[in-house]
Image 1 (cartoon, rainbow, N blue to C red):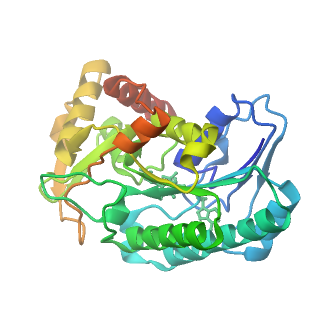
Image 2: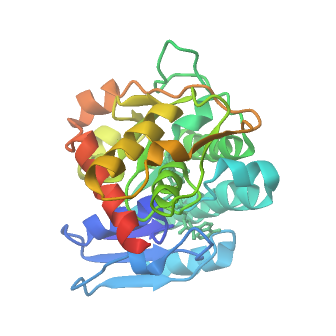
Image 3: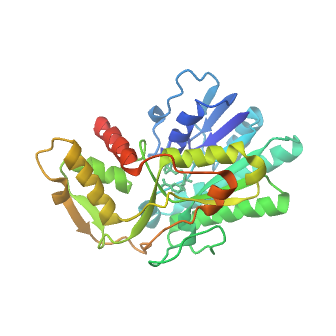
Length: 327
Ligand code: NAD
């Protein structure tokens, strides 16, 4: 099986590739334009010989076409995106280009490749977010049939990409799966995101910024658990093609609670001369800040036997230690 990944030098993509190198794929291609969020060094291909990296921008349809037609993949996992909500609020152009046009280029080129070559084993996996559903009050959960109601330019661009993929599934019988996942954490994430910010600011004894009153709620999944969900989708195409799955861990925390938890773990496990909790600083809230995200993952659990394999505190400690070593 030949697998093509987009955005493999980013956070989730690089974790996915590092696990994929240990699986039985015949060859792996990674298309990534190396934006500020990418780091090629996070991809550890080690002894895996048939790995090819192409510095390609998915907004260029000709480049995408050349890559797909030359590699002839059986599986495409599409991670590439502009992914930071704050950046989308200050300038949305790259989000429209990459998340919408880039996704269009990939599915249209893939569709023609799939149809004209009569490729029997082909599966396109679209990596999306729970943010396409907007936000929740204290009650309720996002599920596969929750209506789309995105709040930010980021989530609106991801919602648009989901609609493109699902319309290709319906109109062209394009063999795809859409995954809407909650917030991931783990090694290899850019420092701009919440958990890397908490850890790096703690060790460098700088203010840890918390939006608003810190009571916004997020559901956190360790990136390796999410990658395992993607491998389940790959391994069970007959149960997952033409389906959408919501993926989460069930671990919901307010932003202030996750900050306090990480600060406490750092206080307990490292010999710092100060208390990290004293660094917490409330800052002006994000515009249009979604209140709560929470996922009902029962469909993927029941259909693909997906389960969370990691202990939350162990995964947080692994993450903390990874960032500490990078300082
Ligand atoms: P990331 O920002 O860390 O990485 C994105 C990668 O895509 C980078 O390597 C970047 O160079 C590449 N890229 C961006 N624009 C490109 C372009 N035009 N052409 C080619 N490559 C390009 O993102 P991430 O956190 O790893 O997220 C991956 C996917 O998962 C995204 O689609 C995101 O919407 C989704 N997602 C992320 C989370 C999360 O918590 N991180 C949660 C749910 C869904």
